[in-house]
Length: 444
Image (cartoon, rainbow, N blue to C red; front, top):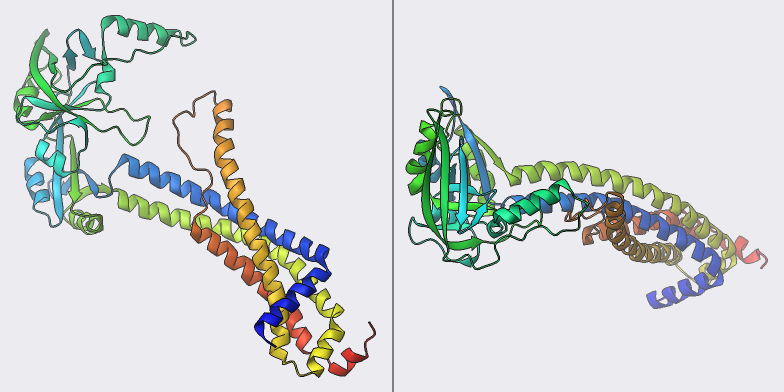
């Protein structure tokens, strides 16, 4: 018997008991959909966590917190920077220092003052080697040019706007909009950076004038605010000199470098560089290590969810077994006739396995469609519900509650098809063992 004829026989037999086959397929569909939807929660959580990590840090970035030596713990210094730059596969070493850790620093543009400016003394060349992106403008050409963060303009407020904002903060029920800050063009504008310290009980102020040459790109997440001012580290001695004389200088340790970040030539080099720096005593953190630990946890978590979902498919397999067993019993005489005219046992077994496989495959396809619909509905509805319950506090939070990758579809389809074949194997074997004479004598 040709394979096409076997398929035709399977279709004809399944049409005889449409309701029974329909209920069996329905049970398989529900089991497969349950497996996918349940496991998609784990995939969704993993995807959201990975995106959150990747938005906060670059893949080829390694953060340095200091170095353990025989003499004890050392903060970042020039000697360490030289050693880091000489490390194989290191493309750039970004080191940043704060203008002051003791006094107050303010940035002014005309009659506007930036409330939350964050002056960073850094090496501009290495910043761009580390792939610092500009939204507009260009890299500084001299020490008098600076780069400002994407939200720096929004932090520039007049006294009237600041008063309005403070009043609104005290009365949040008012419908007044928050001040938008400076709305003009920043490129080419001059800002005055002032630093105030308490020296011998007296307030002493020093100021510097810089020209804005570029504005950084917006952070990956809407809730992240970049109000930094990137200044050449050639001003480091001048700016930190006033802080060293302040009354609080003895109480607060002025670090040589507050942030040190190593950038590798490629993502593939991160692990090797990380291990090399650890061997040298550096305290490091890289997102690849975080991802490895996180993926290990989520792989175990997803395996557990898939196992629980598989139980539902196994329950559905009971229906497939009963359906196929009844099919063999009902078609005993037909099987006897096929064997009498020379049908091989393998052909008979294949016919029943094809029937059970068709039930499993059809259930898997319908289950995948339903699972995608449920996943889409969950990702659409759950944020709305949480937003309503939390009164808008979820605004700006991007979280994937359910994610169905192709691998999950293949796993669920494979489990459904495999369980269906196993469920139909015993009835198929039973069909091949039917005695021809007994089957032919059986009355219709």
